Image (cartoon, rainbow, N blue to C red; front, side):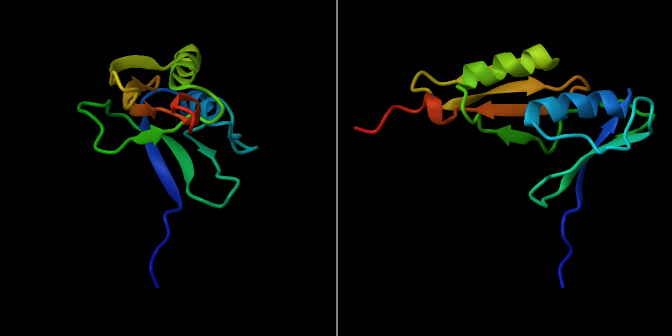
Length: 129
């Protein structure tokens, strides 16, 4: 019997609830009902039963590039629209690696500096002929 991944955990030096709000808005998933500002942790559950995102307060700050990050594929938006939406929620632009052919990705950081990439979505792909 193999283990299952229950949570993907983000360390936070600031309020875990605030960082969870960013990810909740970005992914369109609600925070747990009992989470509130100032709590030492906050949880975003996956309504489909997959791993939740758990945000936990730690003392030490981030010192290096993430060894793990999310690659997001926009749904119903172009990559540019998704990047603008993420920036309006508090993300920061790290690098635009969009290629001339439309491939590639845009690297962002969440309010705590955790990297994420936005790939092209279905609205960015050429229509089939």
